[in-house]
Image 1 (cartoon, rainbow, N blue to C red):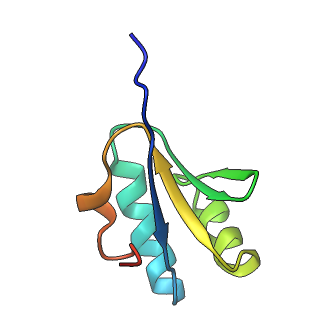
Image 2: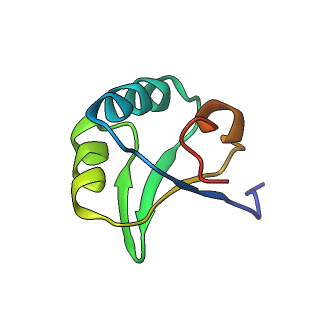
Length: 78
C-alpha cells in the first residue's frame, strides 16, 4: 500500500557547517529524502547535492514520505 502524503518543510542552510551537519543527518535518515525547489529535486543524502542547493537556490524545501521534522528541526524555517 502506498502512502498518500508527503512531508514538506522549508529549510535554511546558512553556513558550510550546516551543509555538513544536514548531510550527516540525511545519510542516517531511514527513508528517502529530497531537496526541492520548484520542479527541481536533489537527493538530500548527497553532500554535493546539498551544497549545490545551498549555493543555487534561494528557497529550499525538504520532502520525505516519512515525517522528518524531528530529525531536521534545526534547519526548518518556523
